Image 1 (tube, rainbow, N blue to C red):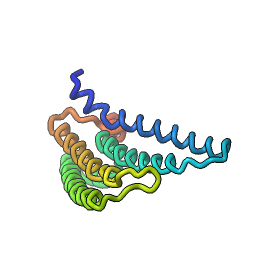
Image 2: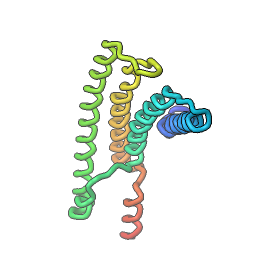
Image 3: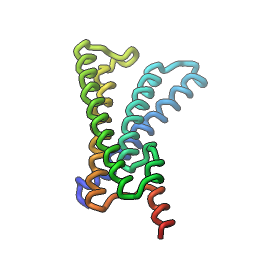
Image 4: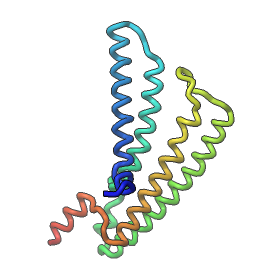
Length: 171
């Protein structure tokens, strides 16, 4: 498997594992410090919070890659498969447009916050770095949805569990 395919396949998953592991270690250290040594590690709470925010955005991208986001399935049931696929394509195009919209204004927010020199209270981390996940995450979501569209047109898309079940029922 080429390096680019490995990056494409495991990018979000790898980062999510690292972020989640760091968050668990920091939270464990905070709880242990508080209840065993009666000391509070305020910085660990802050870092854990920021890791969680990054974790959420990267997980949203991973869910988009695997087509696991919530969607309206009534259209699939009301219309023939060919028509429902067109509705799915329209939905994906709107999702990409929304993601690009949020990424654009998220970037503007990062520039504004970075320009103000705002720092986090405990660790003095530039808040622009914390907010950078908004444009990054939504650009990654748009990219993953676009990849899904391309895969469906090529015919080599990964089916969701519901689609696999439906195909098995249809025979």
